[in-house]
Length: 545
Image 1: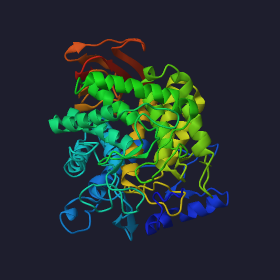
Image 2: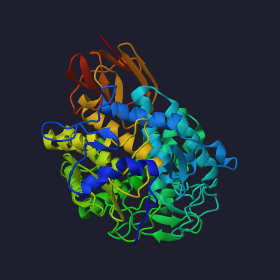
Image 3: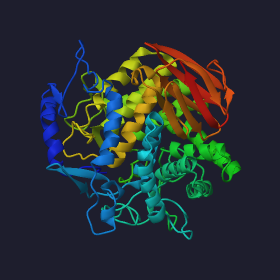
Image 4: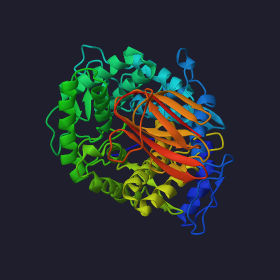
């Protein structure tokens, strides 16, 4: 199968910026600059973080990318009402033509954009207290609810569309390339959207999001089937109107698992059915892809059939979920490093023609079998998995791998935050979903695993698997509201915590095995990291001196 994901004419600006780097790489020479930035190397000629004015390149990267969304994105071309909305509402990517952003007219991909932007926005909000990215994402999700949900009469009723034609105001599927029919949907990405819907309910309290999430989960319950080595528990692609199965096998089901987790935790919807479905899908995931390595999907624009199109996203989602929920898999200690090696074997060692596997000691990662160029967001996925496995295993080789790959990604912005998603490739554009959702959200996983890499002498909530709101940073005080019954939060503090309260009651220093309490680590120079474990929702207040 020929895959054309993201291929077309490279934008003039980004092609010029990265051309000489690619030219030198093809001749086995490393350039002194990369995407317009001087490459900083250590004594072993291995890559260090990009030099930035603020001192912490990782923090700088995250702020640049959201600042670009806030200030640099023009509205869509007309006519109205399209011209009232930013380009990322209706187009999958952009072209930079003489410093003017123009929409790239391949498709629109709400299935990936909504879920990744929600995760990136909620984690950035917790990290900074800046609510604007959440409000930006809310607008996009509200639009999808109004213009991208199937009617009740469909075989898959009240279910979200995951693809659309570029520029279409109504989301009815990606049909312009004629690989999909109207109302074809990737079921896995619809589950991802359902997770984002429920997260929006937890954050904003509007019951329309809860209803939308339950509708997704209820459709998943009704459509569950018996899985085997060639048929997943849900079909990968279906026609939502007729119910016809278009593609039988996919393995990217951890967004659906997370949706069910949240509804079960919140006692929302048909909880007993959700538990049964979750158990069945869990059994299939551990029996088949975890054993045979067939982590398959095609993202939102590739029609794939069979079990051959391996995808790093699918395997990476499995690894990241297991890192946060090791109880899901009795063999997690063996499977987490196994998943990292799977990526190295399939998407580091193997490359698109003429592209490197490593640069300055950094492993760089491809996307899927039918689209092998090296991508920044896949590389940072790998860095996050390596960092999290290091936190469990204390194997410093994984810390080193994560460090170098994360450093490489810090160079993939221009000076104002425009992303270079695939900077060693020719003819690859950068996508809104990948560059401003999927890529930055992975940094917080890294911070949770290795808080030493977060900014020194600052206070930050580094990561939480659950939704946090009412975040306030004050002098020697951090507080927030945890919206889910069970959860774990990771913080880096510029003060020593002397009191941690949950709903006005003190929680205590505890061991790793305990279900509730906190652990603390002295990072030096007056900085500390803490991990808070909860068994109830509510207000958390951390104070110190």
